[in-house]
Length: 109
Length: 116
Image 1 (tube, rainbow over the protein chains, first blue to last red):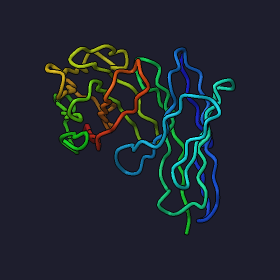
Image 2 (cartoon, helix red, strand yellow; image 1 turned 90 degrees about the vertical axis):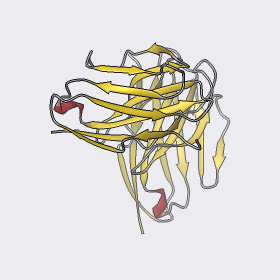
Image 3 (cartoon, each protein chain N blue to C red; image 1 turned 60 degrees about the vertical axis):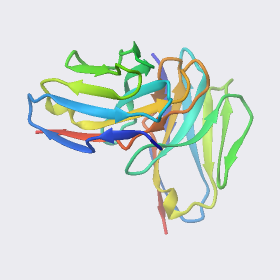
Image 4 (cartoon, one colour; image 1 turned 120 degrees about the horizontal axis):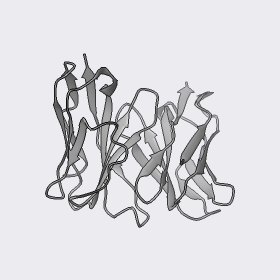
């Protein structure tokens, strides 16, 4: 059975802190891994990762994939209150995007 | 349209009532997905369309759930004889390509269904 596991389940940090969110996966047909940010509305796309070791970066957010160890991390530096959200990891398995349960991040001023 | 549009945004149904949820994907997007998201959980896959063809419906929880995309654009998710456990947010997503290539999905705002 396919699995996508995210950790931690929730995290509370102060503004300015750096956080690392983890996503491990075991799927039978891996094509890519995606990160989404979900506030009280639709998940919004952050990154798509297909190759090991190549960092994707957008402002204070970055992500990398390890296809040998089957995990990805999402880093957020200098966190702001606007980063508070649920961060979802998903894999493209060829017939669906298979999601983890998400990491709930709260950034305190 | 500019994004994925879902309607209604909120629906309250009495137990046993039938409901229909609508999704307008981004124009030209080949793939369309329906997900069910319970509070505090990640989206759970329901079904996947490639154009008008329903390629995977393995996530539909029972035969009360039915989805269609007859012209390869707008899709409707129908739930018959709703039960309280059907209460959730129903998310629709579309992507430009099929899942055989690396592509991202764009989500609508969801329909929050509450069965009372």
